[in-house]
Length: 336
Ligand SMILES: Nc1ncnc2c1ncn2[C@@H]1O[C@H](COP(=O)(O)OP(=O)(O)OP(=O)(O)O)[C@@H](O)[C@H]1O
Image (cartoon, rainbow, N blue to C red):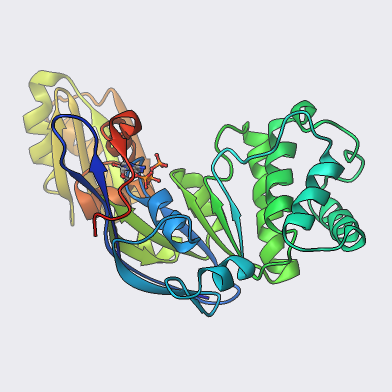
């Protein structure tokens, strides 16, 4: 369904300092029909830029791709016919009724009025929008609006749909509901789904396969479980008095297979193959040296641990340092 090789995108930076942003630095992607693939990375990693290239909205600076069997560069219209694209934040007009919005979208894709209406009714049923047809889109809840965005993206029955950050801004219940609908698109209707997310729980819960991007490059891919299996052992955090931290870390270091130590103040973090069996042993050893453990936490590997192992940074920390400075930059389609 998607095969991309060496996709790159550069943007020219506006203003006196000029320069270039190399947003996507040579991405290879393969997505098979019927897969639900999550494209995970922190803010500014290059997810949206990659998605916009794959959906023909942005010209690659370098690289090639076929999407839905059509060549991205020589047959962009063919690509557009084969795909649905649901942008971040969607694009519904506030003063238009749901049914009108769906019909208009169908007509834009060349459906007759009757076909647009019947396809709209089918989608409304599939996406739990039935009964809302006469409401103005501005009166819908966040979750309803996202489902309407998805309905609009599916009006022409594409076999492949791109969803950019589908659950951003939704409350936990609406997110869970939306995930259910996204799963059904694939399970019940055979639609291939490629979605970007920077939520670890979304990537974990939804994707058959994950592709992790950081700083414009793919850094890992695999099922959520296989990625988590790359992180060796459980994460352990213990708290002791700061004065005893070095000694406590030395004692913990004697646990079989303990590794990746980090000590900050009285907090000691490390990994160990079996956290549940190691903890009683550690407690006893600390006790015998008169060191009191004030708190202890053991967690199974998460996708954040995967990101940390791969890049040396936590996904959450990475996000804080990379909010894109859109206002200072401009698109430069001819930079390639
Ligand atoms: N139109 C543009 N002009 C200049 N630079 C851009 C433009 N669009 C994106 N960038 C830059 O390219 C990099 C990648 O941005 P992109 O939006 O693809 O990341 P992202 O992973 O989708 O992040 P987010 O999760 O915030 O959407 C960032 O440094 C961003 O500032």
